[in-house]
Length: 217
Image (tube, rainbow, N blue to C red; front, side, top):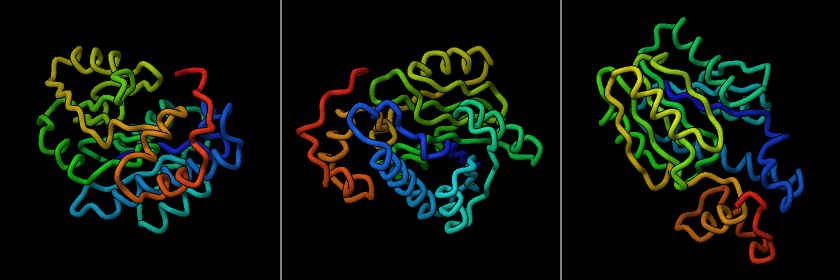
């Protein structure tokens, strides 16, 4: 099962608060999610998709694409959402899970196919973020092979946890999945990249040259 955790989008992209007001951040988060879910919906054949959320916009998209909804009423964190989804998978006999974030708008179906193709019979696949610090995709078989703990520097802990299981861990960089959106430079990279995604069209309307670099860059 593909798991996409979506916190309530009204509070999304707080790290961009210095350069974008809340309505703009909500629009951006909605566009990013739309890009990711459109790719998943168009990928056939594919595993079942589970949207882990209580956000109204995300629920609408899940209904549109006939994705499974895994309720996340606590809305605490991506880590907590995936723990909830992992328990759901276990209780429903799901063999494997592929966790991807809701803010990787340049994801491509061939990248998802690559992850499935290299996945060990028992073990994991990790796709690092472009900066090498975060983790932008985690495949686990079985689904509870190790806990997913997300954050700014999650890749090394995920790799250590995966290796500690004694099962194979494949690390594979993928260019589309690597690009997530956290700061002003990420917006510029996305705007300059080839494509006409919802999020690209949105941010190309903004005066990116006037945006300051985010404090956490």
